Amino acid sequence: MDVVVMARALFGSSLGFHIIYATIGVGLPVMIIIAEVLYFIKKDSDYALMARRWTKGFAILLAVSIASGTIVGVMISLLFPNFMEIVGQVIALPFQMEIFAFLIEAVFMSIYLYARDRLPPSLRIISIVSVALGATASAILITDVHAWMNTPAGFRITPDGDVTDINVWAAVFNPSFGVTAIHVTLSAYMTVAFLVASIAALRLLKKNLSQKERQYHKKALTIALYFGAITSLATAINGHETAQMLHEYNPRKLAAAEGLFETTTHASLSIGGYTSLEDQRVKYAIEIPYALSFLAGDRFDTEVMGLNEWPEELWPPLYVHILFNVMVGIGSVLIVVSLFALFYKHILKKEFPPWLLALFVAGGPLALLAIEAGWCFSCIGRQPWTITDVLRTGEAATKSGSVGFLFALFLTLYVTLLFVTGFVMRSYFKRNPVSKDLASEEGGL
Image 1 (cartoon, rainbow, N blue to C red):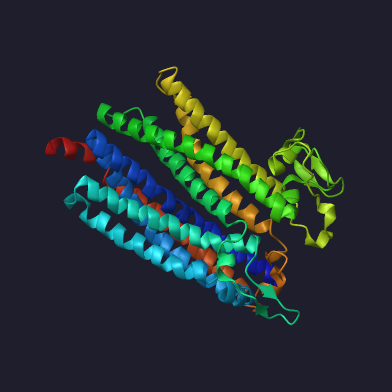
Image 2: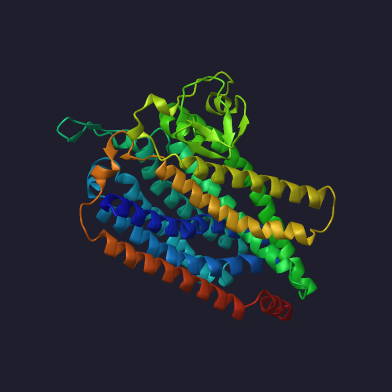
């Protein structure tokens, strides 16, 4: 296999593994905040128990997230040295600031984890809010570099290849930074909400639950559904802003996402299907007339550029249309499911039937799949560039012949870590079931 392809595959595998833990690490502290605030307001010990149990899971996942994040950082330096040479001169600041964001997260996580039972509820809330702020800031700062790769700013490359006219703040606040940072944050919150809903729904499908345990899981499910509905709707609104950003700053990527070959006004939105190079259209898709033009410019007659405006060797892989559809499609399904659940609960005032709980169970894995598809679309849709229109991936990648060995080594490591994490989580919560904690609380009262 070509060294460049192997380097991309290795880094993609590393990022794909890490993004699961990073996403949960950003979203779960917010769920803990909600539980702590509800306990503070309602004095219902179930919410305090939720916060405590979610924190235990968060601590286990955080350890793996730190390890995998370190690997990703080392990996990008080893696999793409020419890219890092430019990054070091132009946009190293977010990497440096991220260290302080992680320090805030780690310090307050230690306080919350080991001293929470000795802190009053108000200080517990302050501690976990600090954890959430550190985790979110860390994700945003790392995402800033990714946004800069898509819409580079704050420097100029001379004909001799020298980096000049560096403006660090222009690089940091590049054109896509705002919408990308918001999208990553909201999608992480949304994903964790549906993961929590998935676990709660799975428990509620069991027949032998005590009434106390059933009430506990119903409360967790309600929190998750409310938070999931809010964040999924907010993510969809942000997705509209992202489409407008692509239209203005990276129209080639937007054209590939929608399989649009010819520049046109009143462009249709293609849902489903696959992009055919021979036919230069998306086959077997559902076409929504004028919708793409409206998404791009809030007008049905907005002109949207097609792929034929650029040489074919500069096109992203055409299968990014499928990745884009998976991301948007799952997001749309989750919006419908969460809103329907709230309608079922508050308008119809009925208990969730088993078939609806089964949909909630599927929501968590689907949300993770959407996250993976979204990151794949964002990175693959930038190809053949590492830094859009500045540095090609073939120029950025290492020429070392040992990438194949590294790929096998780290793939084995990731699979091992995944199984070890699952084993540790399962073992801990099997030894410490909710029923045991609920019984302890009743005994304490």
